[in-house]
Length: 432
Image 1 (cartoon, rainbow, N blue to C red):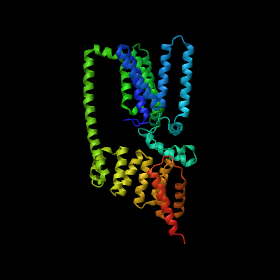
Image 2: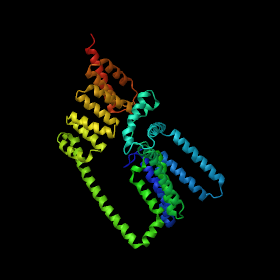
Image 3: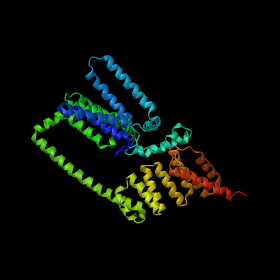
Image 4: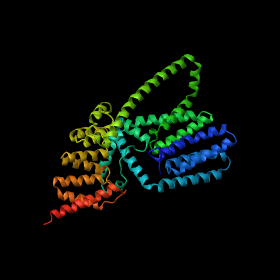
């Protein structure tokens, strides 16, 4: 399903699920035809969540339904039990039958992430630790278990698909417990309030918690809006007392204004660099990589700890023919984000620079990170062929010819055809 401006249907489903409880607040205020319009809007939102194929969104809808039942069917225990049973059966089927490959892939990612947490439970790996540690751990697993059923599902992983586990991997058990305590504390404070808005806020917070266990909602601004609204609602009595104290209120307003101006200045400074980077990347992508090297060198002073920039800089240095500089930048990027794409790029750079042995190491690392991909095998084939190791090259060519295709496309067909043609031509030249 297309996700619009979101990178995943779960993002669409989360935003809809988070907003749905507040329809109840508006329902109480609106009358007549406006309620009819609101009902149409609610029906549309529910239909969109169902059509998003987000299983987490379906779980949230089931949770809402179970919470509404006691209100609507106070004395009908049999009806409530039947509906709850149907919902439970439907959810069980959705989790097991719909997107079964996705479910298995998520299980694999959670297992590797849990292993990282168990290896360093108290301190974690620090900010960005998941990106630094996960893909090498995935490659290590497939080196040990090359015939694993998960090899067919493995891909580049940027997130453990569990926000609490991500915090645990990067900040240890203490960090994870702190985040959970914040969620529970906000929820308890909201549930103690009698206002309908507080109940809706608590429901939306529960939806956020559910999505946080199966996806990455914290990357969407709406999740922080939900947390902010819940925090303000939970601290309503404190804010009321603050309004009664004029001196303290003026102090809070002054501090907020100063913080806003500082934040605006920081955002403006960051935006200026983002704009320069986007312009340099655009020109480089249109064949001006060499001309953009001075601009990239200036941007490096600001983005030296940004893995995405370092990867982009590495690629443009490679296209500009600066192989040694590209390898140095790739090394810096690998300390922050040793990804599949970086390993593949580093292999290409080494092969272009004539460092075939190093290229083989990078291609093998990329292959074990994502065994289903064809590009690392192509790099291995040409590296072995260039090095004169024709037996190994033939073995890789045979693997490529017999390898099952997960997602067919022009690149896969090109690799299969080019390697087959090149291998056959070499055999003919060397057959007496």
